[in-house]
Image 1 (tube, rainbow, N blue to C red):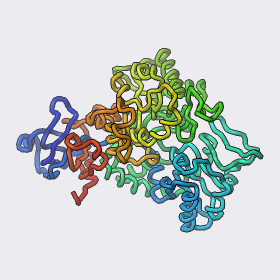
Image 2: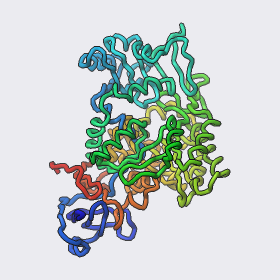
Image 3: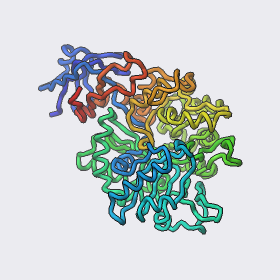
Image 4: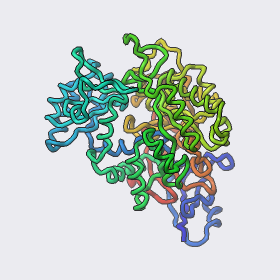
Length: 541
């Protein structure tokens, strides 16, 4: 017999226009049966009912992270973390301290260093890392994940020498004598990234178990994971063992596109717990690494307009190949030139479709919804074009507030729509919000705060950065609920609280509509319910 639970003593914010607010909710198994007043909806129960008192909480549909690297996040829980270092010396001290706790032959992973925040913002080299790592191989991604700082042992392990050519879409930075400095940009770091995502980094299944505990504690009930095939296998093992407690929409790496097609995988295949997502393509790099593809060069960097990671002709061909196999496309694009080219590729597909049922249109009544991941800096004229094509802007609000210093300096003279949530919403686009963890913290409430205030964790600047692009609380919550559900084609079962939907919801200690917006990021999660089962409960609230 399916378990029935009556959740009471709460304000249920349903995002269902027919009944926007309720005071009780009844579940049977994984589904919502009824909403309303407790005494009214008990009549819908058939048999024993367990009553759960939510203690006056505010309940929202479960949060859904539309862009997270959950395997990377899980792996980095116990890895080196030097993101708070404010100088090269501090970073190296952190490396040395961490290295001393490891076996002599262990790899050093993690890092998340950000030279843009150092007192002397200069990129480091392998020689200083050699000394700090004590002879152990070290491969340390930057905060944005688009640059790897490697030491000599790591370069030797993957055979990178002065004679190694730059790969397409990447750069091996070299000194005046032509020797690799240890800085690898974009695809130049792929061989080291493969080791970072291998058993050398630990037991991924066990790491994911710990990671999902932490994600559930933030109110997340679903994620769109953009890690590799190893993550897919680990999720499948958790699922088969009955240990998967978050719903996972799992992307396909571009390197596995042919395999996925051969296996007959298509976007949406699977079930409500583990489904196939879009293929992940890369158009450019990142702002912090000065590799996002821009229409104007970076100030003081003659000729540097970023890196076109996948050349346009190849990008267009991959978009068409994926769509023809029933696989949606999610393309990473941060710079305005990158976003322009991705929209060009999507527009080519929409105007010359192989099968009209495989292409997105503005009313959303089609099988595939192609996406742009990050969508950070757009030409103003591309805002309306994106919306008219029905492309989903998959965005991470805390990237905006973290990037305020960089965007204000590196892009000061550019005519851009940056992190243009309001403009895109007003144009008719459906925003799908996420965190991009572990680059940013995975807490959706941090993202809601950023979307509403356009301020960083210290509530600066006053009034918000480019405040015309702020969203309302309701719109920000939708970005983490209905938006991701729409992006994955699951809006019929996720993102709202109404009869027949999955019983996924989060209970917050206070009503986010009733508090000062500056306090949104400090809201605490009381409980997280997935499929009608309590997966997280905060005993202190």
